[in-house]
Image (cartoon, rainbow over all chains, first blue to last red; front, side, top):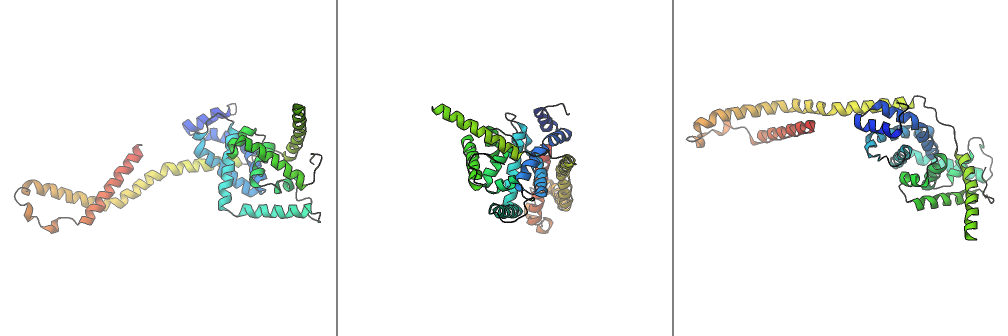
Length: 183
Length: 123
């Protein structure tokens, strides 16, 4: 099973409802999906619950994977859709983001705070809108191409590029970075 | 000149991109039983899907058995009754021998539901 390509495993799942093949796909891609959702929600427990739901949705809809793009790109699209659906239903995500935003503002204002508890990434993500955050994570954390991000986030390639550009501008402006160097 | 500027911007962006990638980079998440949990949930779901239709069919059948047996009894009575008397005594059939209209409608709708369920099982 381990030597098979993603597309071959997908065919097995679709044709035979092979749970072992699906298990192999989950093993291969769980890290990407969980990392994406953890960065998006900043709540590990919520992210792992969403990741499980994402893989169940993927099982239900796997016949819609056309095989033209990468499987991980399609899976991250399912993950992002699962995240958006869950956010509409639950207020927990909003509470988590609000908490991060408040902490970030405190840090940016130079007040004494729990500097160890908030990473640079948390502070950068907190200044971005939801779309910008998702696109930046898909681009820089998951390494997807602009076209793959366009599929995953359901927006045109041109919009993806401008969202990334805008996201970077916001990060520069929020943290007063003039020489385009982060870190 | 313009292309030079674009190339410079691209190079500058690349440097930024590398920095951002380093910032976003994290350790891979260990599986720690996650894939087993997902596969177990998928298998449960398959069982539920496989069992739900037969269970619904059995429950529907149990609910339908009484009115269905009444309907069959009435139909049998009618078949026994009609051939002998239909031509001569149709106006003399006592009304109390006929089932109430509501019973006939309920039984007929149950039959239709059973036929539909059978069709779904066949599909």
